[in-house]
Length: 189
Image (cartoon, rainbow, N blue to C red; front, side, top):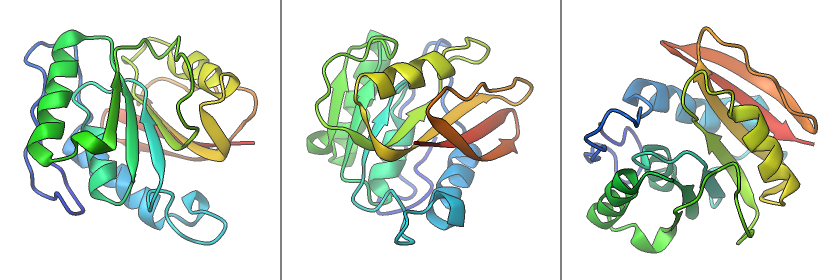
């Protein structure tokens, strides 16, 4: 697994050795970030990428690959929620190896109970276990708890065969299927 673009392009990322974490593939990450950088419906009203100088949240962080990709492509800071201790160790190893420890905040938190807001975010990535049904309630909870800025962008990765129910207070901007994954891009009203 490698970072596919930006200042850390080509750098190898470590993934947890167990099979409980399913990292987003390089190909899906590349597609996702190309859309964030170039799709008109996903840009800010000023026409720039939300990644540039943005603060993000990776709610099911796993290896941290989505966060490290975003930081490599211009995000300022990433909050990562991960309940698995092995995955948290992997995230810390990757952050140290990339020299990004000062640009992440890692919480041993369950995304369903996000806790106190440190800073509202511009972008939230949700890659819950496939078929878990957690994407909708977690996004609704994050919005209710104040984790999302007005008009924040949410990206939810689900199994390509499943449907994603958009929670109240969000508009679906785009949906794309990429191999075994479906990417849903939503904006908070």
